[in-house]
Length: 382
Image 1 (cartoon, rainbow, N blue to C red):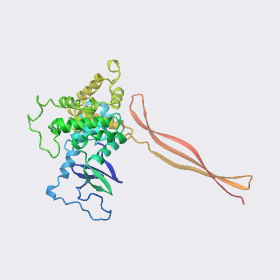
Image 2 (cartoon, rainbow, N blue to C red; image 1 turned 45 degrees about the vertical axis):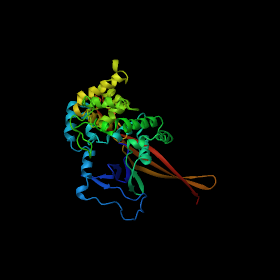
Image 3 (cartoon, rainbow, N blue to C red; image 1 turned 60 degrees about the vertical axis):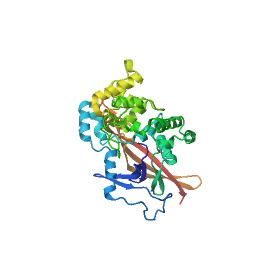
Image 4 (tube, one colour; image 1 turned 180 degrees about the vertical axis):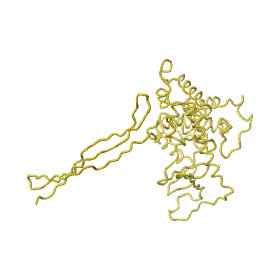
């Protein structure tokens, strides 16, 4: 999900379902605050009293939204135990990455967000999604004088001038995909079509559960049907469709396979040989099917835990401790009558790194490095 912003030292904020939600976490609780829309079009002075309308306690559904969005109903400890029992590799790596959850995102936002993700990095994707909201989404309010917009509707992105504007904003070829997909959803298929692709066991927040028989002609075929339907949209290939299925439509058996997941499959699950020597459509399906057989109904969730464990940003960080062991001062005379005072500092730097033993298990070791740092200054001789 690409719209979270750090709004304070220990706080993150985002607009969801017509409000600004802010979160911070301590050792025992997740704390949240909801800011509902203000009538003011511009931010008030920072010392002004709040102008946000009050919401009666019985009308505030924020706690229900938080529980829904973070997918808090499943017993995650039990799921981790289940996946670990089925997979030794998961058992080895997952304990360091507890608490990884699949969010219940809005289907439309997930669709456009993952179209932006094609051949892209997280920083640039986040910038693109922020620009979509800033230029085409409704203003919800301000935090610390910073504007927060909700995600734009399909109609807002279907305007004929959108594509050219997105190109100017740096979207590249994705501008055409976003504009065409928005027109298809806004003018042909409708949001009801997209919402009807959701797993009925993962309802959309704020909407009534989809009744049986209310799906498109032929009935629901489940995950495979949703995946196939998404492929008809512009800019949606198998991986993007799987991301939308997993993180927007609630199909937790969906396993997106990108080059990163392909590397995991090669390294840890013996892919990359014979007919599966490269990432082709057939290999893509083979990897996803293998993970579904291994982990079961929640395979996409388990796959995301390993994906997280393999990212450099989340891997065990190198820690370093520098301790001064010896310090000495040397005075040297210079021809111009000045003296140079050199302070020689001998340090030992201990840092942890991970190495592999012969049995491929990883263990921490300590590497000690000694270096000499010289600091000099000149002063008049006596």
